[in-house]
Length: 230
Image (cartoon, rainbow, N blue to C red; front, side, top):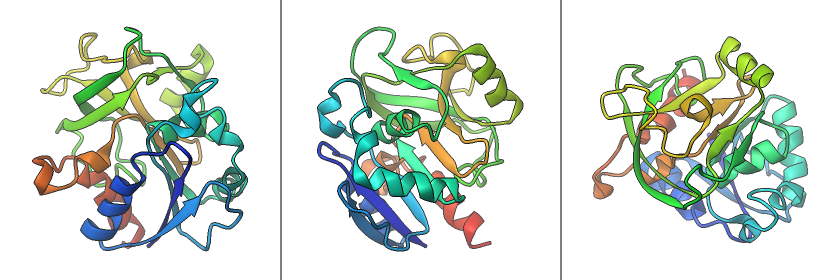
């Protein structure tokens, strides 16, 4: 596959994603600058984590208007695959490609440590090869990861099987204490109704290398390649 990683002013996880895709997964990666107007024929777009435009106004609110996003929105609306990680997830909600919003963490603090995720469904490109019974240990690093939506949107997410990940404890139990940022019903990741746009707050690219002592995030990248190449 040919991946495109979008780089905004303030992106700081672009090289992490590129490293995993190129060096570990052996895929071709195109670096896409935020002022570009051409996706260069990529099959899959990744919006990485970081602090695009310094998180001024609110996270993702300015990046959503970068020229490249016009192309990303058209690409997604035609069925193209797009994954937003952390700040990328925030940008996708600001662009209207995913429902809901990411609010300030309930404790009003920046949180940076490992959390556990329960995979809620295999019915998506990025979760297709994951074990629903095995919690994933994935790091987070955000100040605005508190997922919120109105009740009708939440019901639609549940009815359409769009909730991909929920925060849980190390045994896979979804509890109040494991809800690290106050997200609605512990939501950590969702997909679009058409199942081609994906957003998650935790960073799988930071848990995909033996050198880091954690490869739990690798299954997400494996899912993409196994499903597309099947």
